[in-house]
Image 1 (cartoon, rainbow, N blue to C red):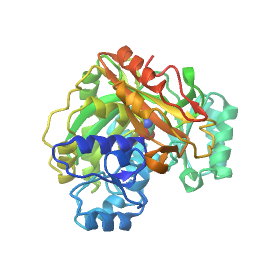
Image 2: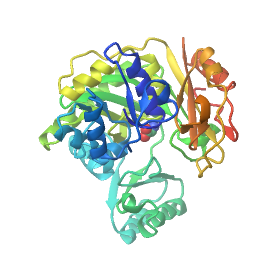
Image 3: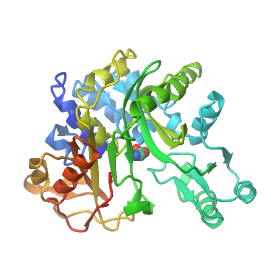
Length: 414
Ligand code: GLY
C-alpha cells in the first residue's frame, strides 16, 4: 500500500480483511496502518525505492494511494520491473495531473463540463476575466494537494487567485498554467470507476465536504467529512449514466492516445437538474470518500487484482448497509499549518461503539500510543440503516475521542 493518509489506512484495512491477503505492507504508512500491517520507510514518491521494497518483500500487488505517487511514475517503475500494480502510469495519470488535458479530452468527447479557457499569460487571463465576469472557478493546471481550485464569487477574488498563481507562483509549477471555468450551482457527488483499460466497475458514489466550517463556510480543506452512497437516492441510475456517458468514452479515448487507463478513475461531478456536469477527473481513490465507501463493501482485492491484470470481470458491488458517514477531526488552526505532537485518546472506545476510525495525520508515539502528526488527524466512520442512523453513530464515536486543539464539523451528513 503506497501512501500514508486516511485513504491508505482504509485501503490497508480492507486488504487485510480479504481472504486473498496474507500480509499488508505500507510505505510509508501512519500509526493507523501499523494496526493492520507493517510500515516501511519508503516515501510514496520514491519510484525506485518502491520497486526495491516490492521485490525484497515479494509483494504480489502494489496499490497506489496518492496522486503524487502516480505523477512520480511509481506505476511506471513497477511496470518496468514486472510488478503487478493497481493504479495508472504517469501518462494515463494526466487525467488528474493536467486539468487542461482532462478538460480538452472531455470537450472532444462531448462530456458535459463547465465552459473553460486555459491561460499561461497573466494579462490574457485578466482580460478574459474582465469580459466574462464573476462568479468563476480559477484552477491551477497541475497537482496542488487539493489547494488548486478557487471558487471566486467576485472579480476581486478571481484577480487575487490569478495574481497568486501566475505572478507570485504560490503553487510553483502546478500554477504556471490556469483554467478559468464557469461556476455551477448544484449537488456535488464523486463517482468511482475501477478500470482495466477497457471496462469499468462502479462503486457506490460518495460526497465529501471541502470547507473547513459548518454550512460550507471557511477555507478549502482536504475534506472534513463524507458520506456514501451520495446522493442517497437514485445513485445506481447515476452510476450507469456516468459509466456509459463519461467513463467508457474516456477509457476508449485513452486507448486511442496510447495510454490505456488502469486503476480507479474518480469523476468529480456536479448534478445540475438532470445533467451530470463533470468538474474533474482524479487518477486515484478519493480522500475522505474511500473511508466511507470501503466499510460498505465486501472484498475489493479481486477487483483491484483484475484491474492490474487488465481483465476486469465483475458486477458493480452492492453496499452491505444503507449508508456510511465519516466525520474528520482536525487540529486547530487547520487548514492553516499546525504543530504536530500530543496524544490522541479514545480511538478504542469509539471502536467499541461500532465505529471504524481511520487515521489520517498521525504518527506512532511511545508504548503503542498515537500522536497527532498533521492537520487532519482522523476520520470516525459508522455504517447504519440509513444516513441519519450512520451519522448519529459516527458522532457518538467521535465524542469519545480527544486530542488537544481538536475540532470537527457538526453538519456532516445532515
Ligand atoms: N475528496 C477529494 C479528493 O480526493 O481529491
